[in-house]
Image (cartoon, rainbow, N blue to C red; front, side, top):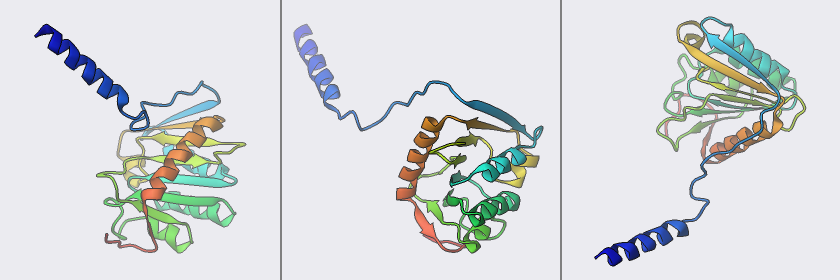
Length: 192
């Protein structure tokens, strides 16, 4: 019996080793570099930090938002779009279906491409990627939703990682994978 268990273990191990390595990626690691800015709401002016990243973008701005109701943030993105920055937005489909109270119609009216993520139970990313190819690349991420409540009512955190373009490109690559699965929209309300 002991021998049979040993053979079974070897077969199981061989089977596990035969699974393609591309099935799941454990993680990516990067050497630390650049500058990190940290903000907490409601104590800090987190919305101002976010808008400064948008205003600092010169060529591109990729956005992933779970909830997006802040007109102030949307207006900063529209201004970036009007000055020639390629602004593209992904948003969670369930949280952003309705037009009422939503800031996405402001972006759509200005010609900013918006797509809704429908593949996931929740597209919970909160990310801004500015000028991933540099110079001046920045990644903004954290728990902060693009909402009035995130700024004024909630306990939220935000990190801005500047000057680490390899990291910014990794975030942009992930954004592009999500964009490939998303559904472009032209108006709200939206129904699947």
